[in-house]
Length: 336
Ligand code: ACO
Image 1 (cartoon, rainbow, N blue to C red):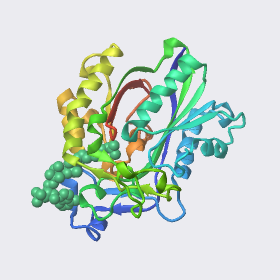
Image 2: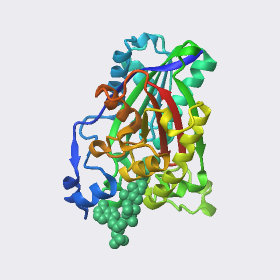
Image 3: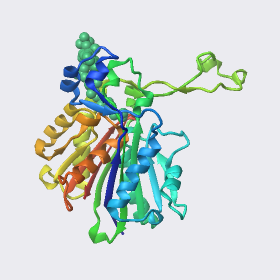
């Protein structure tokens, strides 16, 4: 069995926040943000909107494009690190879409690499498990874990959802054909949002005993990031990873694919990786000026825009890579 992408969709919150809006709450300015990151606007969840609604909208659009009814979906993978419910949102999406046969639906947590790990999982479920139509959704609301007084991180992120439908097909039509997947827990300290002991408790590990029972309801810390280390990590590992994925796909060399589609973290990171791979800017997909870094949503969001704009045409080959917290990084070569 082979598998191929047959539909895509995306959704963003209605609130649009400009660099000038951020300059009203932290000591920054439009020029600094634009020059250092390429970002001009981002969308932020507010009011009654929630992340699951964005994910459902993106999934509907992907099903519509593919002309596949929700009852034919047999697996939903929700790739997210910031979901509405820490026990997962995929079953809620399954219910909202009206997938009547109660297909399997669960969440995958791998930050900005989440969507590509979801894509790989979809191909494995189809090729080894007999699944036929798998929705892979990347959706994140990093705004929920941002310290809006930290100018080093609050300028970077936005909220969004993107989705693709991956479908079983004859092996001759296989459109998902090269993956390279990695993690390095050693670098975890560079990007974290960890579970925080309640501050009124004695949080030292030596004294963490039954005397602190019952535990108080605690929460997660704000996102803490060493931007320079993440920058260096991405520019170092991603070109090697894409080359490895191209080799596995039998497509070595930068001229054997049409588009380079990277996780949208920072335009300087995208440019640095493209330069190392010798891919000219005309073949690089970028939409982070409008959305910032949307974590697991960034790759399917940029893909969806490029497909609907007519840039990415049927038959085009895309080299994609995600990278971020964990640390994790993942590359995939696929045909649209
Ligand atoms: N506005 C104005 N000045 C600022 C701002 C700001 N928003 N932020 C930092 N500065 C200042 C700093 O204080 C510093 O001042 P100093 O020289 O007086 O000390 C100066 O600007 C330079 O700061 P740097 O941190 O060295 O700037 P750098 O060029 O490294 O850019 C940035 C910072 C944009 C964060 C960059 O490192 C980056 O994009 N890193 C990657 C981050 C990333 O992609 N993270 C997400 C990964 S994906 C995931 O898994 C969620």
